[in-house]
Image (cartoon, rainbow, N blue to C red; front, side, top):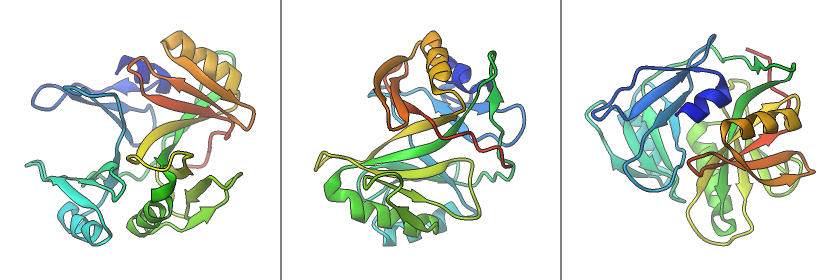
Length: 228
């Protein structure tokens, strides 16, 4: 939790949950959109929360598209898996004010900009179609290269959704976070000081890192979106 607090520059809410396992990263301005959870076991990972008025009703629609309901906790949210196995939740929280990027010592800025769904090639078309139908956001293919697509629209959420076709044929769909920054080298150095490890650096415009708990994520050359 402390690592991601340092990455974002956000405050950490008081813990909550039966075992104090949940907390929210609270930006100085705008609605919160990032949450952290301490797991009992298994590798570090991320999942999506989709904000809806009626989680139960939304789950019915998602099942028709091929999703599977995993749990219906008493708190009222619904936990599901996409056809390719990515966990996501329908929750009632509503957000309307997108946080702005933060500027760091030295003058560069950064922001958790998007979630990238990592999709094995055999599942790619079906999984992309599922998320396009579920979110109602049109899909744009060939973002830079053939391997990337994006869900985009006028009503932008706090996180953009990028869809990546992996070279591997099979496996479960997984996801990672991408940060946008005005200076990738400076932002990478800042993350290393916080405890991240650099896994790979690509001239095409991103650096892959691992958080201290092991989860991979990227710092990209996408400039932080200053629009509200």
